[in-house]
Length: 210
Image (cartoon, one colour):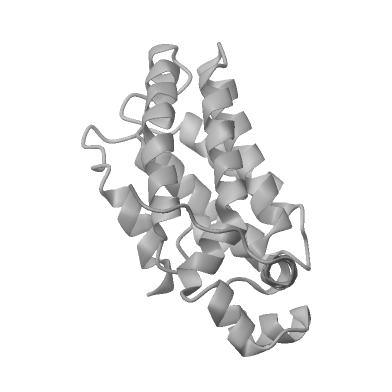
């Protein structure tokens, strides 16, 4: 059994919260590329304080976005409870993109704008079975064409997310129109009998920066 981690001193915890607040505000607007130097400056702390609290960048991302990731997983779980599978799927995608619209950094993290953290990987692992089940139910109900897969919905997420990122300042609600168009296209698409393997999902996300 390992010894419990002692609580931070009051001033150390205060600095940690200042750093998290500064990182959240900067990354919501500028994305994940915000440097530790910029975060320290915005928080009014020194660089040493940043590295003491968050030695690795993944430590910062996990602390910053853990609650948001749990929220996205919760959306998937709620969608699974919908009696109408198509309504659940569309509700889930819209809720997910809404919180991405409020935070550019979260959108980049979920769409693997940077290398996915273990936190995001676990989220995908938990969400994929729920989404797969919803898709299967929608296919059986005649709401989706046979052959629809989670990779198709990942493609919708990536495509609409790209619109969201490109129009944050010029048309912040344009992604909603793009989502309706993409979902209507998927719902009435003539899909081949050779659906993509689920492994394609990882390539859809990870290849965006290449």
